[in-house]
Image (cartoon, rainbow, N blue to C red; front, side, top):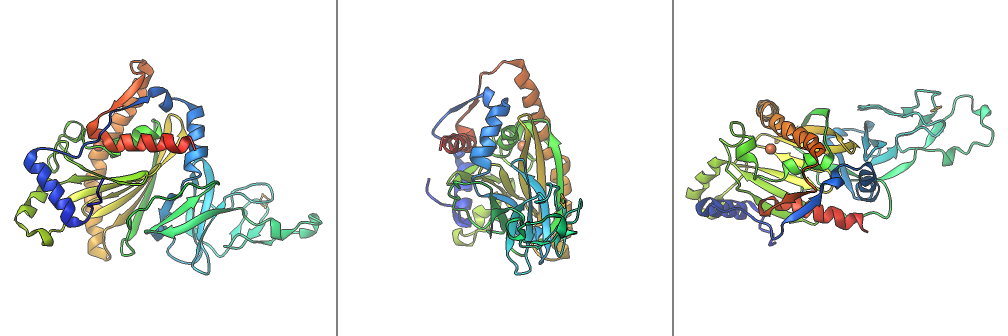
Length: 368
Ligand code: FES
Ligand SMILES: [Fe+2]
């Protein structure tokens, strides 16, 4: 697919679809075995071969604003802690004390060192083991080899990325996803009784907007009108708002799409960056089991300043209270419906092409 992702091209593509009553379509119909959503063994393969080997967003850079800022969370079932060192560099570690394994960090905060809550072995922000109380009790302990166990971490495109295991999978080439002026103002998480892929699929097609969201999103959007752009295994779906039609009267070179559409970036395998009019959500789908998913969301403003913050909160209430509740109801219904045994496969059609791309990519990485 040609990369026509700048504002003017996006506006042009959307206006052409509106005029013709068309949408971007895929070339292929995909049939995904339902068994792949219902198997703990399959989830184990996805976590080991895909999640832990692909560079994956862990949190926005804005989560670690200063030296000592840390954030502890599970990623692909593994407790990790990321921390900004005194040198400004972000590092990630397996969140387990090298004495008897207690997690050394909880939640988020700012620290000068990590002190294990059990017996107070103390680690520097760069992972080195600094202090062992009553060290004489451990004759021969080599402190140099008992630092926190590092995990590969990088900071780019406004996010902190971790790659837990090798051989690592090549990262996708993506545009800047978060800008430095965007302020992080909320972090939430909840669990949904569904496989992580069912949740993901609901974010990356616009075929359902009219029917699932008749009073929330549809009055502002279109029925089945989306752009699809691919970035390696990742992709972006564009949900234009009806008010984008006003660009018809704006000269081509002066068209700006901000505030006139929603971009949903799917960062393969399990992260979504959703840019709404006034705020941006970074959504991480963390599998808990084959039929449970923890949805972690970091919410940022789209600009600096108090006004941008107030606008973001206002906008967020609208999206949170209506559309996302409707999506969750569908997702839970699909998971329960799988018990019916009615479907051997789920069929994804030409209007669900980013989902098709996702399953094709997932299969490819699983087989490496
Ligand atoms: S388990 Fe951490 S100090 Fe003992
Ligand atoms: Fe939806």
